[in-house]
Length: 455
Ligand SMILES: *Cc1c(COP(=O)(O)O)cnc(C)c1O
Image 1 (cartoon, rainbow, N blue to C red):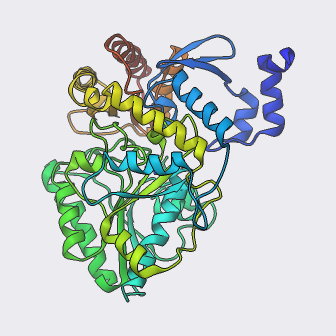
Image 2 (cartoon, rainbow, N blue to C red; image 1 turned 180 degrees about the vertical axis):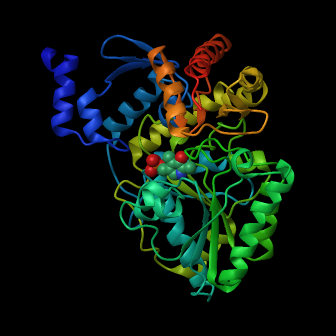
């Protein structure tokens, strides 16, 4: 076992047998993969012993930080008691039921029911079918079309990748599938032109109205969006955007689906992103922070409007996963939420560390290569710019993002780049010196980009 653990050996085995998600395998195999072996708090350690501050919380998910023994213990206890049973055909397990209740204690009055999945992608496929069966059960079977956004992200399954607005994903697998349409995104810095952010927010929101009218209101089932686009680059919409979207969904009688997979469970300093924006979703997929990534679990929050129809009118919903409401995952999620509550991590993100992070992040705007640095709670997006006075972007956005990202990595900081935007989403447990470390290391990487004199 010892020599199996040896880094180069493991890398060779990995290259021989392991196909990775979202990776160029040829490049990865040539370079050798980084092997992460352990973690504690906000830090992860690779197989050479090198320490990194994980300012990305894994993949936006480790909200309570690494190394929580109580979650491991809750899962182990549940595994010994009952490792598995399902929620099909009239059964449940105590953790699944109690988790549903626990989640409902943090949602609004009209969002009290949940359907469990194992991931955010499955949650997307689940609400996609729910939205259609909802309208069919109401006698409107032609209301099937779904509107989503360019540069949105909703997962990697066929429906998920179709609803997402990622061109590179659409190109692989002949997507999107039928019945899905994309409108613009509220990305003012890149696409706002001479409009003020407020006017631009209204303009892109009204693309929804135009698209519904083009398709016909009686054909459209739902609109889906993330409160703040995550994978798309932490695109924080102008304040005018969400109220207008909510107004249009109501006026045109289509379901509003808010993808809470990243924004849920405290990321924005509220339990859910829709609470931050003051809107009421009809359906809301969740995952990631639900278990802080300790075990895979997701779900769809279902409003009374939809749930009442499913319960009263639908009969059997022919949909579900073998592991929907898995008792061990549910036990881990319950303990995760208990920690969020007990340590008041959501309030801390809103009132204490969030404002501290916001000020530190914003301070980067004085840098020559930074066009804009915005954040909400503990989610930050930083726009790189070649000329900040004119909002001119670098000619090769992917290269500048990678340059900054790799410099951070070499200096022990995990950041993510989407094109020419740098993204941060640290554990909610991050403290002030750790925030300072993120900002110091990132600033050095920005210096490096400035000195590289790219066009
Ligand atoms: C990650 C993500 C998903 C997909 O979740 P998986 O668990 O990776 O399937 C869906 N929506 C959003 C907004 C996400 O960030």
